Length: 144
Image (tube, rainbow, N blue to C red):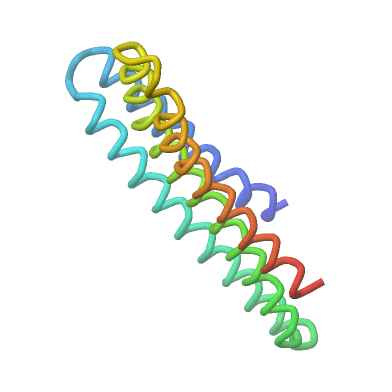
């Protein structure tokens, strides 16, 4: 039962911070930039809490049961690394495309011949996300 409560705490924390950020922006107390910054801080705090909870649970389990082999720890950390590689590269690719795509549309509207050049810059932003995905596939395949 305690495991289910511990798994629900991060989701509840993020949901409450989202509602709080939405209400403060809607009322006009904060800007959208500060709301996004507070969401990023909340995400980092929840990530640290999840990592700490899993480490404590692993330590408690290893005390009561037989000690886990180092390959189990390595596999768990490799899955965490693969998830981080995919997630962070996806966020970076989204930011890159979010900046390049409107500029490409603007350049194409001024000069239709610039479409090919503008499309290359948008594709470069997507390449970042693909590289992260490939790195995570390589990490996962090493331990399977």
